[in-house]
Image (cartoon, rainbow over all chains, first blue to last red):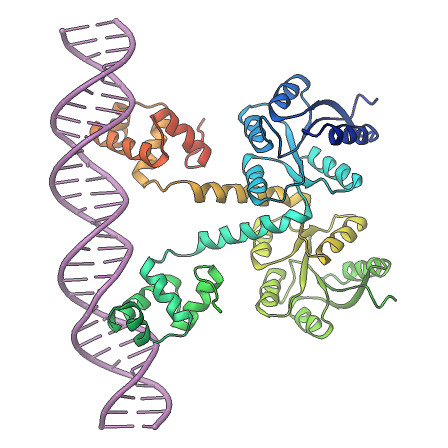
Length: 217
Length: 217
DNA sequence: GCGGCGGGTGATATCAGAATCACCCGCCTG
DNA sequence: CAGGCGGGTGATTCTGATATCACCCGCCGC
C-alpha cells in the first residue's frame, strides 16, 4: 500500500457501500484510505486520530448527519477538505453543506473515474459540484443576486405593480384597491423612481427581470 | 460527417483557437459543429440560422462580449444551451454569465475529454462549472445566504457590536462613541433581541457566524 | 372641443424605526 | 458594604418611509 498518497477518511453508515468504496480507492495509487466511520460522531474521532487530507462524507447518517459534521469540523481550526458523497439532491442538504463549508458535493451515481478526478481537484484546493446539482445552486445564486440588487418596494407599491403587470389602467387599479386614482398615481411615481424607469411599461419589464414580481397566466 | 450528433456553434474571436477547437470537435462523433462566429453579434445571426443545441461561447470578444450575448439569447424564446469557454476567472465575468443564464462555465485549460464530458452533461440539461471557479461561486453563494438570513442591524448597532467584539465594556464603548452608557445598553438590548442572543458573548459569536461583523487582529 | 389616459408637482397625516437617556436590580469582587 | 459591571424596563424625540389625496398638463382619439 502506498504511503505517499492523499490520505482519505470515508464516512458512511452503510457498511457494504463503505467497504466497497474503500476497496475501490485502495485500487487507486494516488490515494490512501487511513480510516473509516459509520456516522459523524465516530468520524470526528477518526479524523482527529488520522488527520486525513480529505474526508468523504455522506449526508444522511444516524447519530450525527453530514452537514452537522461539516459544521463541527469547520468549527475546529485544523484544516481538512470535505467532499460530500451522497444520493441526496435535496436542496436543504445541498445548500446546508455548502453553507457549512463543504469543498465538494457529488452523487453516488458518479463513475469511479469521476470520483478520482474530483478527489484530485479537491486535493489541489478546487471545489466541485455534481452536474446534477449545479443547476440548483446556480438558480438559487442568480435569484439571490437579483433579490439583493432589487430596490425595496413597499407592500402597497407591489400591489399596484402587480395590477400594472396585468394591464390595468390607473382607474381600474383605483377600483381594485379601493383608493383614489391620485393615490395610485403617487404609488406609480414612487415605483418609477425606485426602478429608474421612464414609464409603467419599462417599470413592469424591469420588475420582472429583477424578480420583484412574476409573470401571471 | 455525422448528421445525428449534438449540434454546436463555436463563438470565439481568436480564429486559430476557434479553428483548432472545431477540428477537435469534428473528431468527436457525438458532436456536429454547424457554425462558427468571431463575436457575439455574428453569433446571433449564425445561431438564428443553424439552431444549434449548444453554443460554445467565449467571454472576452470585440463588438459584443459573451455575457451580453447570453443576455440577448435569453431574451429570445428559442431555447439554446450555452457553455462559456474562456480563460477568464474574473468574478464579474463569471457571476455575470451565471446571472445571464449560462448553462456552464469552463476554462480553456480543460482537457478535450473534460470538454466532451461537459458538453454531454450540458446536452442532457445539467450544468457544469470549472473546478477552478466553483469555489468563487460557492463562496459568494454562502455569503449571500448568510446575509439574507442575518437580521438587519442599524449603523449604530453595528458600531456598538464591533466595540463589543473587541472586548470593550459598556463604559469604554460610551467613551469611544461619545454617548451615554445607558444609550449603549439600549443598543445592546436591541442587538440581543435581533440576534436572539442571551448575552453579549453569544451575540458576538452569532454575528461573526452570520458575517455581520468580521474578526479583527 | 371634450373625455380618457398617463405623467408630474405638491401637500398632509400616520407610523415605525432609530437614537437618545434615566432608573432599577442582581451578581461579583475587594 | 461599596463599587463596577451586565442586563432589564420605560420614556422621549426625531426622522424617514408609507399611504393618502388634490390639482395641473399634454397627448390622443372621437
